[in-house]
Image (cartoon, rainbow, N blue to C red; front, top):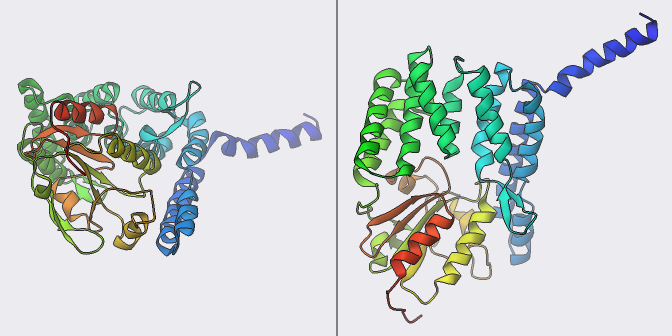
Length: 365
């Protein structure tokens, strides 16, 4: 081999890890995004005028660009075990992100990439001891293929503790399919397995036992057809609020925060829903987890970002009452607080609202 060829060979070897991606690069992308989000949150809180608030909001870090960058690191190395943890973070971020569609409107930004992660787990990592965080990340992608993968892991993984975490994830996904008797029995079976096999496993500063307990509470008190608990709290001005104040109205109860990856889309669709049903026995009520001062900045009278009343819940006490695990989350309630829908914002929320409002008389503003 000539000296020149040897030099180029060595250069190629040096560049290969960067081209293939690395744990350090994946961690850097995640840490950088989280730091920029923290700085952005402080900027929103500090904005003192409507113009400054608008500029601060528009300077929000680009989640799509961040997830794109992470994907470029992960994609060539998905068969490597080190990708499991950053791929779990990818799955938590990606499902709600959108891009402008060719025909107008918005389309999911990472559908193919999410499926590639699922296939990589099934093909290369089904026996990995690091799968527990991935099991919980699969829950964020409410898709039948994620449910099927979790059921496969809970039935075949060599580590009983990972089986238990996968069973918990499967139980959490099953609740989106309905409350029929056979589905309920399956959920309870999976929750029992999670508690028996993995009660002490820690996930995101909590335990499987606590998460399973929350799921059992949801089955008992927060499933479709149940009467939703009456939230009691205060808005950003300290004024007391109760969910029961809206008796007789269809209520969309939105759990949210400005730090959600898809916050801009959720706020836009919420404003549109509110405008569409103005003059009807309908209200949208938020439960917000941001610092009170930040929420106050977003909903000030001369601001048009947040136009509905909100419980200020910076300590997540009200979210805890409803066992909210991830944001955003929506409950659609009828006039007696009976639950008709639980899930993500979107078309199903609108359909549930329209069905409940049909035939109800308009109200004077």
